[in-house]
Length: 331
Image 1 (cartoon, rainbow, N blue to C red):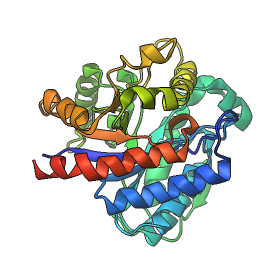
Image 2: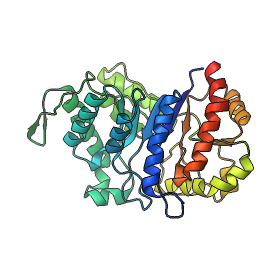
Image 3: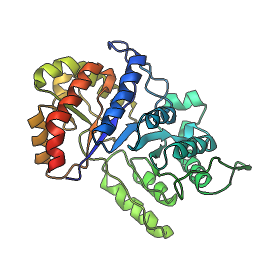
Image 4: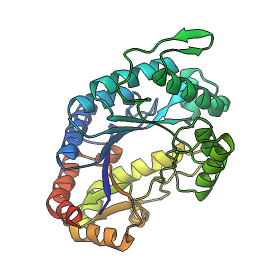
């Protein structure tokens, strides 16, 4: 079975949870090490700013800590909010990490959407699409070429990255215009949803400019997996954290935006019906994978979602490793 296992950490520590921010960081980094030792395919971190619970605003810093504590597993930044940053500084961070851990850093460049974050950075929210295209082009060229001219300044990014022509960059987004932007930049796309129009728009734009070799990755599979011997008890223990996680993430979405991880639920009972949240017994998880009949590409773990207490997260991970993972890897 070509099923991937990924582990996401956002390092959130809401005030109602028992774990401090320092404890969340310590446990999350340990879980990334655990993911590598158990054959996971990827560790994931995202970026948001000004969130009361401390949602990590510096994904490259956190990725550096994770890369230093592991040996082989790739780290996927999904996504870096490119318009909020100086592109040369971002390119330098990527180049440094590619020297420290060659080929293990992959970065999705996203436009961002929360107006509060743009206000914090002093960036015009209405220009985020054009800013993303400009910033992504500068980052790509600064990593691939010896020098790049940006805003009239000649810039030389050092150290030069090990990965050629540059460390993997992908474009984010969720609408056809974003897919066309990715193709114009001659970069692959990792969209936030599975809208089939994105593939059509990407391929159409690529054909227009004579670009081949690009692709659109579709995010399919559960976005939260928690293994337990007693689902009813576990929902009582973790339901408030998952509801907090899904409520806050849904509140970030703008009109007309659709993101695969989004869940709209008024209470925990409604959460239990969400198809992308898997809280089940070992056999229940295996049955869900079997019933999907190969239609999911990855099982995405988010063990500390919403500041979920680490002890519950560890119980789930260890049960998965003992009773689910051996069966899946044997198929």
